[in-house]
Every structure is written in structure tokens, then in C-alpha cells.
Image (cartoon, rainbow, N blue to C red):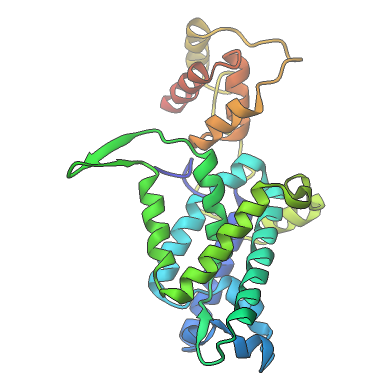
Length: 292
């Protein structure tokens, strides 16, 4: 199971966050300070090392955590494609801030000055993303291994479990705080799901993030009817119904279903228009366009 088209096409905010996380981790790893980045009771309420609040959001404390963490962040780019870079930026900020507040509250309640209770890294964002992953991403295939039934989503859950247990209680705590933050976002607390940043913010993130191999986020969406070669277009016109009136828009649920399957949002919408909002026919249109 993948998070859609390869690379960071239509996911510039995810790209910027992953680059920042990797750079912070490597920088502090070279200095030999990765293991000291975790938050503790003394850091917040004693020594006042508040700089750790920012660093701990990005830098992982070990290479295995970095590998699993970046893999999950890369997969969850599907949500940026689904809701758009602007709203996804709000989701990141909300998840990071709320999970961090929960972590500080937990440290205040536990009052353990001797042990770092919270490991560093974007655990809040990663585990907040598991909430929409559980509810909004459908299972596409099932299979059995030694008699045990698995879905294509199982690999993501296993990677998340590995990350959650990577440092035992130090990683479990921020993971649970992230799940709480993701749950509050899904419940639309303070109508957060309707919030947006000024477009200049997400545009800036898109410009400062490094280029990736292949197509850029601004590249044209994958070919579908209307953009595909003439032969493919004529063939699709013969096999599928003509587009519906322009005044009728495809349902948001149908678009989200196709986006969750890995298709570009714009392409999904166009295919649904061509298929009269029939998800199965639209899927065939998109797959046929890919084959050409």
C-alpha cells in the first residue's frame, strides 16, 4: 500500500517538514546530542530549557526512529493531497501544539525529575495522522499470512507500533498525546477543520522546500480524459459516459475515496465528472489514463 503517486507531487508542506526533520536529526546526531533532546520535568519546570520544545518537534533521537518516522510522514502525505496544503498546514500546527501541551501536562502531573519521559521527534504529528488513517483510508486488499488475516493497511499500523514502542514509555507518551490531538482535530474542536492560513504561508513552504526527483508539485496532474493522448481519449469516450453538466459537481465523498486510493485530487474530480459520479467507472478512467 502506498500514499499515492510517488514523490512529493502536490505535497510541498510534507516535503518541507520531512527535510526539516531529517536535517535536525542529522545535525544533532553529528554533535552526539540526539539522546539528550527528550523533554523532561526539569527541562520545562526546572532548567527552563525551552529551546527543546522546538527542537523536539523535528529531531528524532535515533536512526531507527528516524527511518520509521520519515516513512510514516512520507506515507501520510496522502492527507495533504486530500485536504490541500493550506488545511494540512493547519493540521500540522494543531497536532504539534496540542500534543506538546498534553506532553507538558503529563510531565507536570508525573513530576519525575530524574528521567526523560518524552522522546524527541514529530510523534505528535505522526500519531495524530493515524486518526484520519483509521477512519478515512479504506482497505483495498486482504491477505493471509500463516492463517492470520492482514490488510494492506497493516504495514502502516506495524510501522506505527514499532515507532510507538521504540523507546518504551518515552515514546508511548508522545504517541498517545498525538492520538489525542488527532482525535480533537477530527471532532472539529473550535471548528479547527475549517481554519486556513493566508495562502502566502503555504506558498512560502512550497518555495523553500528542496526540489524532488521527477515532477514538481506544480506539475500538471496525471493525464485523464481531456488531457490524455487522442487515442486514449477517444477510447475512453467510447467506453464511458460523456461528462455531466458543468453545474453539477462530484460529491466530496467520491473525490475523497479516489484520493485515498492515491489519485491526484484534480484528476479524481475530472474523472468523476466524466463518469457521472460513478466511483468505479472513474477508477477505470484513471487507471486507463495511467496505462497510456
